[in-house]
Length: 366
Image (cartoon, one colour):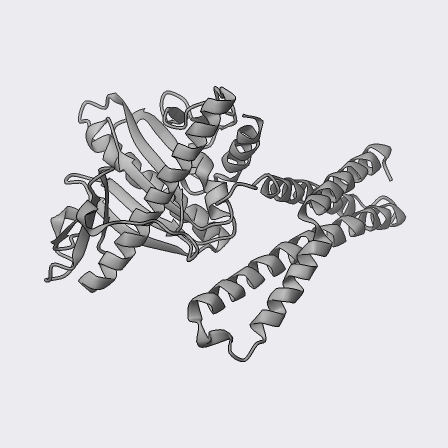
């Protein structure tokens, strides 16, 4: 085997070993055994919420263990692939296949390594994403819808379920805002690095003079509420408005006032939900979103106090964090990590894993 290849495989093995140590595989197996024991109890579904939590945790833990064990198995097989290529009189095709597998392993191990950096209090949670159009008029509304599609395509690529709670359509094109939930292991920890202001530069398709337009959209990411969380909302602090749900172009979705808008008076936070058929269901879904936003606000306030005590000067998430340039050149660049790609079309079609990994690594250094 080529000495450089052997050294590279050794380095990959050392990286995977460090990941295995952080994940504590023996502890993970013990957790799985305990959860399997709980899942086998005949009275498990007497409490559906608790049962759902147990089965979800079991599925996530089993998936984590399976992923790292498969990587170790593939890495152990890699030297054999190179040896077989050499034995077959230097089979170039077999050697090329081994090279491809080595690069795939590098990417997969790197992705798993990033996962071990997610150790925040809420990182394991599902993610609630809210996108709002900002400066830029109709182009900003169109950009907000492009970002929504980008995240939905990312979730689709990974097989993650998405629930859209509310979408407010703009008059001419695009959306004013949307809120949706991504259900996946570590969805919040992974997607939280997307929070901030996104900027689009392009020739506006809505300008009959073909001028270049800069527009902005804001992305907010909060952890989904869990059964163990407690966010007290007093009735006097809540205003409830009901209205008729609408779709693109103002068309009616149904003929009843089933959509619900909740306003938390002390903070001014407003959430809406119109995806369910009944007003009661929409109010319940909107309450989940509101409580999640209040939980995130409380977390941010606690973090601000910690930062003040530590005299921290870490970067602000509220500032511009990524630029999507479609004209006069093609590039998407993260302004915090300096990570960039020259194919905006692929990024806007959901290929954002590189940006997510770079963001998680960058945040770890702050």
